[in-house]
Image (cartoon, rainbow, N blue to C red; front, side, top):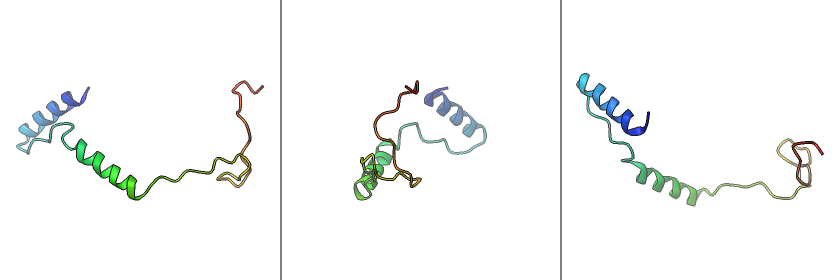
Length: 72
């Protein structure tokens, strides 16, 4: 079920229960994205250092190099 079908179903249910219709999908997308962007500007994400020898979150040194899924 996509967003339009869900909206139509919710609108039908609201009409049957004499409730106000829900807002159409995507109506608040622009304001949500704007708020997220403003939050990101004031609180930039933190990134761990890229040094392979520095301790990781567990306190153990990070492995250097890339691991191979085959174990070779």
